[in-house]
Image 1 (cartoon, rainbow, N blue to C red):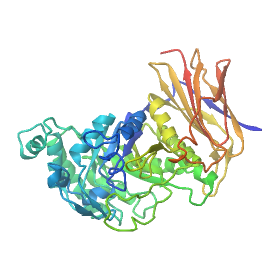
Image 2 (image 1 turned 135 degrees about the horizontal axis):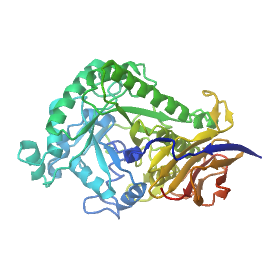
Image 3 (image 1 turned 90 degrees about the vertical axis):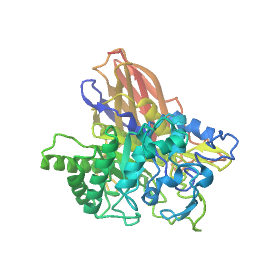
Image 4 (image 1 turned 30 degrees about the vertical axis):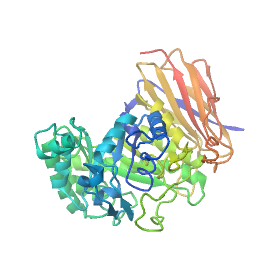
Amino acid sequence: MAIRSSMLIDKNFTVSPVDPRLYGSFIEHLGRAVYGGIYDPDHPTADENGFRQDAIEAIKALQVPIIRYPGGNFVSGYNWEDGVGPKSKRKRLLELAWWTTETNEVGTNEFADWAKLVGTEVMMAVNLGTRGMDAARNLVEYCNHPGGTYWSDLRISHGYKEPHRFKTWCLGNEMDGPWQIGAKTAVEYGRLANETAKVMKWVDPSIELVACGSSSSGMSTFADWEATVLDLTYDQVDYLSLHTYYNNNNNDTANFLAKSLDMDQFIDSVAAICDYVKAKKRSKKKLMLSLDEWNVWNTIGTSRADERWQIAPPEFEDVYTHEDALAVGCFLITLLKHADRVKMACIAQLINVIAPIMTETNGAIWLQTTYYPFLHASSFGRGTVLQAVISSPKYDSKDFTDVPFLEAISVYDEELGLVTVFAVNRHLEEQMELNLDLASFSDVSVIEHIVLESEDLKATNTKANPRHVVPHAGGRSSVDNGNVQAILSKASWNVIRLQTKKG
């Protein structure tokens, strides 16, 4: 048996061009993300600066355009000056966000070097927990000013004549969270963020700034926090951040795969708050969103490392399943649906810590199941999102009603004449017959139909079996009278790439 669904895809009905930064990521000084992840001087592939080249190649393949750094909770206790200058003079310090010892071997300049190696920009975060506007403005001067001043000349003395020119900056991290070093009320944070934003932009008017939204939609502060913070910062900031994580700890796959509906509602709610403040201020500026932490996180809420003050202990090293990959696919589709408002998004994190890429310190590297939907979206999801009309049978789950079995979106590259359909069949038992109506296009042909599927929803990739769950290009799609007929396997992620007449 099979269930039937359809998509009407018209080139004239658009959502928005995709900002490439929608496929961003995040690296924090947490666990083995930096030390043992991107930086592993004793690894056989390490370059002269200690960066793992096997990790660089895996990350380059993802074409990640922007990476948030150095945190996360870490940044709220971080003195950036401790991570620059000669490594022999850098301090080892107690790191209070994650109860570890920070060696400061990798800091701002090293990360800037690494970012160039993987072809990405840096989304830099400033400490608004233990510090404030003075340290923030000095960091902008250090990173972005050409020279002739104390902080810019200090950078030059550290071997970096050319400024880094970091464009995007986060004004702190999750400042409403009681776990945060220097947590603040909305008024305390909003006032500080506004004044910090002013001086940062006075140092470099070209930068763009991201204000902290509430740490999640489940916080008691949610909505009131956003409204208050934006009331105090609206004229100075360019984006508002959102953070959200999901899990299947109740082992209810149907409900888990429906959680992209929660992400959809979350984005709509925050956008509405932004527009409320815009109307209240009679502003002409439309604030955009930065969903700069999102992922499946099954170990959220677990304790920190068992023994305090270790150096880079393994933390939050989730092992992802096939169903986790399907959920990530659904979340990517949701982000694309909101490409008109969500201009930046960061899958958190990139390596070892709740990540699509795993390494063994001084050893092997392998790709988790979640790597592949992100790879496909980043590789083929560039262009303009089209507003498809979707018809699909639906189901109810524990927390959601009217969940479409088909979660899908299409992206159109007009210059190349390419249409890409990303689709998840949420049905756990039945394959899906999908009809794609592309009447507004001509000369439609199928380039390929990529599928990620598994008979075992709990199947994983491991060091011992790194290719247990990998995509294949054997999907069943064909053209019939200008329409595309596709078969989507049960519980599958699909990428249907179509060539049409250009223009």
